[in-house]
Image (cartoon, rainbow, N blue to C red; front, side, top):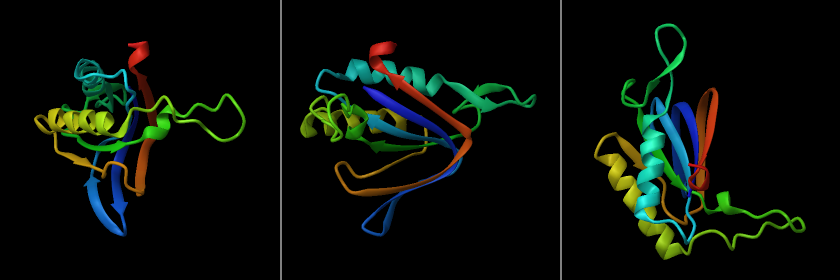
Length: 147
């Protein structure tokens, strides 16, 4: 499982001209899921992500977590995080999870996050347009194989 976490001042996702998710200060997270990922993998990734202390405190030190600042989440499925670009110029996506499996875990991640935070989402497998103001910029890649 891979998360690309961007600290944002605001972010939104649009499908067919309609805004389907919008947040203020928080994390916009692109989520890639492989076939080997499980709910346990998701729990481990969520524990790490939600505990990240990457917001500034009163001394301008990155020392505060999402909950410390009352942050929000925008979660977007992103199978292209599993692009394999080693051969040629056209990426292969064979390492991305099968759609049914990936959607099930994506929805699980949304449900867990929604228990603690205001959580918005994209639409799985839709052609989405994402807008954000990356605060910093501050972007972190979490890979379950490296945790």
